[in-house]
Length: 269
Ligand code: GAL
Image 1 (cartoon, rainbow, N blue to C red):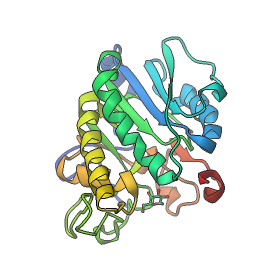
Image 2: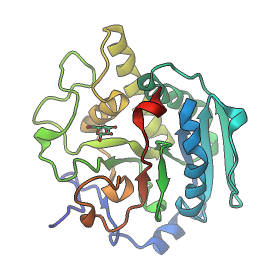
Image 3: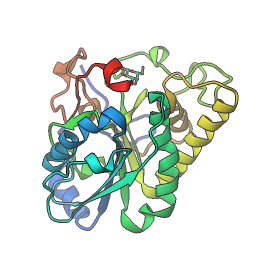
């Protein structure tokens, strides 16, 4: 099976073997990278393993700032961190519905990418907290606007993508449009690009709310909509988002960022 290494608009799709990390590390020796993560309510339990695994595999040797948003700042256990790594803890309200917690991230991103991050970092990576780094994730993932192919859909026909299909939603993507189905558990880019992205998604979320609708996969639907019309400059293969319960794992040589198995019902409520 041949897996694509270029999109139709000639953006690289990053797989193991497509890059030389020594060349890229040299190009990025003064780059400052942020990692944005939400750990609200019961999701706080995922934070320490997430951060510890990040210390082991994420941007090793580079300047990293963790932007952690939680309603339980006092409960955060700090991991042992490498020199030059910074942990910022920020208070955030805990919405009742997990869907709202998930979407709240876009609102927070619009504020931080405008006001704080431009002076602190060059690139921002946004991730779900119920994940662990399991292999190298480095500067090869940096780019102006970067999104990750959803691991359940990397072999799917476009017709099977779970885009929002109701025209009434601002996240609507008509059949025949769209390139990949991206997962919101890992995306990133230059700070100003994530500002534009989060502004657009947040605007869509608010407009939908006014009409009393919610996109089928919340902010992931809005993210996908944005990326149809604002093509990512780099695409990450499912090596960068994997779940060991998925089929076709034999095609994925490196499983770099893995979903933590959990009882969804228990942890969301
Ligand atoms: C599921 C995933 C959801 C959402 C959905 C999209 O596998 O758990 O978060 O991404 O796919 O179809």
